[in-house]
Amino acid sequence: MLKKTESVCFGDPVFRRSKRGWKVSNTNQGEKKILLDYGIKINGKTEYPMQVGSVDMAILSHAHLDHSGFFPTLFFGTYPTTIMTEPTAQLSELLIKDSMKINRRRHAKQNFFKKQLNMLMSKYIKYEYGVPIENNGYYITLYDAIT
Image 1: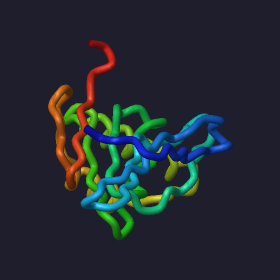
Image 2: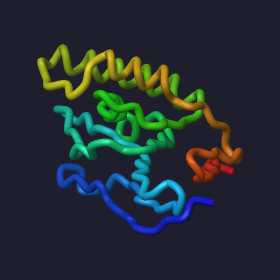
Image 3: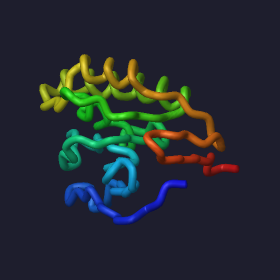
């Protein structure tokens, strides 16, 4: 069971909403920084959330760009444990590649490269809903919101 000991928000004034994350403690492992979703907003121009730095674990709930679009930035020299479902991974890759193409056509700033996207796609851990995931003494179970 993942024990939430301190809530931290990765807020973004551009989006007027929070990116959720947890800082959790485990007596054997010390403090961990866990990120849930990390997206971008494409509406005329691409808007980016604040950088969160390195995280120990990143969880992608679903493929929409406002949840997945900034995930590749987590792979600049660090490789956090990243978990998502197989369909989320496939759709995220497609959508993120498309957003990169749109940014190139617009001559817009891109905060990551194909290399980071490839690292994300090669390093993620596939999970199934309802199945507990153990990582460094933490257990996480994710559930489909529809069921």
